[in-house]
Length: 250
Ligand code: RET
Image (tube, rainbow, N blue to C red; front, side):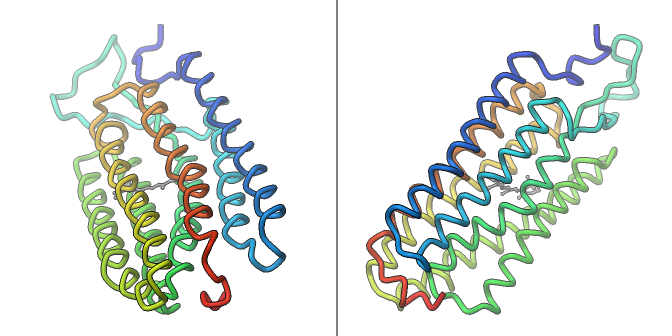
């Protein structure tokens, strides 16, 4: 028996991750095919962004499903230094997730914000805050003391800034382009903002507080990743399909 049940992924957990791997890979292909069959050359940027980020996620899930890309981290001694079954309590932290998110979350923000005509200077600030959010989350997940919540707090502050940028400057910018742009943006931005709220909650229950098992962690993040990447990308390309790409200045 493993000294700590939290250390290992179950067979079911691994099967689920292979299923997510397949969903990501098939979505990448489907987005490419959709782009090539429905849009002329030069108007496929959003399909291609979606395909690229799903392809990236499929590689991350390949690592997760193989039980790779994780490292054991000592669980914070909140309740005194107790041994669990004669061993110190560890929890696997899948840092592979953060490598994925570092690549894919800026691409998701690009998918969304390139349809608003937001000035580049502001786009860069949003992407900077996004990277800050992911990297502070990574550091927090690897830290073995309650300082991890300090890193978490920095990440949350960065996310609040992103929400504000989406709600105020980006929304105003989309509205200036016209009501069709504004409607499409509001739909996609609401979905993205809601789903992105659930990630820090998952983090608090998994890497942060060690409340739920690693198999539950895989289900929680897995469902979120399928919604936030392929489902979001499909909804977004359909939402903007009637818009005039020339006005986006891409
Ligand atoms: C962390 C912990 C630090 C605080 C915050 C977080 C937010 C993460 C988010 C991740 C989104 C990931 C997506 C992945 C791809 O599908 C890093 C968990 C706020 C919002 C959309």
